[in-house]
Image (cartoon, rainbow, N blue to C red; front, top):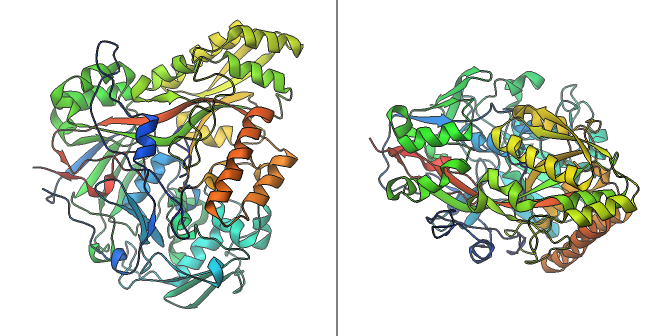
Length: 599
């Protein structure tokens, strides 16, 4: 999946599923005078737990009680930028995915225990799904009492509509796993229903069947053991058929979750109020302790951190949503007992990388020169230093089972300040001294600081750099265009569920290259494409993981489409009146499903 300025994704094995991470908090300081007890790669590995598939009992509501909880009040959210999408089918960026927890529901969802262990359960379905024919067929039964915000019941026709609308041309930014599994890899799936369901056409019953109002049956040509995890993504949340306004749905979606949108002023604020048609008895994940959420935009990390650390007025009831403590505030916050007690910390599943547009940068020596030139440690500093992450040597996060600790073919971990002389040497060998690079970056402070660092390093290596700022709210839409006019640009990605299969195929399968896809580097290598097709057919998870590791090394060493920058960690602060706060190993942010106000 993309994190907000990153996408994310989550491999290990349970029966027919795969495993995950679970991370909780501890204190510390990144200053050299103070002990740094931020999370490490060892923590990420040690805290990784297998994902279980829940039965009917596990899927019942209400959600597990939260100690000390009470009802009432409004949570104040300080957010940097507006949400790029509200339509579930368009949601792949992490901040909108967090909002989705409050307003949307899908067939399945993740529930999390106190140690961060994850279980896939039925959300609007009675359980996590029933496989048959060796996992080629999956059947879901819908719960009673599921209604949208207008009180209209949700039935299997709404689920069918939700799936089929994802084939329509206007849906460009959401996940494509389910569509491809049902109707063909890459962009071929769109041919099965090019206008979606809007002209009365439907997927055939041998692909998707709804034999009655309560039953949904998915039929695949190969086993799909990860389906329950895929369906838990925000992008597969339900869109009621009668409420679908196509492109306009992105401005005002219909809620099924515990809250609904009461007010939206684009670029300024959003208010959520209770959805009285939501029933806690049907929901195993979410609580609705507070009366509403007041979300305002245009608060950068510095502003968020200062307001919440000061803990005055509305900030006592405030949280960071997808923001993090600003680097300039980390020392003072984590070294103070009171403010540190109001933080949450965890190792997140994202890898930041500098994509090199292979349509424009065709010479691998030039791509290698860029990679060697980058000072990873310096680039990390504006994004939180040791509390924000660790320099990366490859393109798989430590939270993914199958990650190879110490893998570092370009010396980014061993020499995190970069190797300018090596970069100069490669650029000279390529006959590309003085080559111009158009660098796109988001217009927020920490990305602007990083842009200066990257520009200086590349210029020292012999490049000419032209910087172009991009609005953070639409950053992924811009860099996700095939004809984006850029040479280099940062993106972050994390697994969509616990499998390397949700990292390598979305990012490096050239057959998926299209506007809105995550193939940001525009890689289109025959060997990579064919290996992805081959490995996806391997049903033994351990064997598949080994083969994904081999392919990862080939991509990094033989092609180098993206320079690894850093793995991410999370540090957020909340107001003193906010209760129930914890790090969510599913979302990699504060767990919004259980928050309450203490008074």
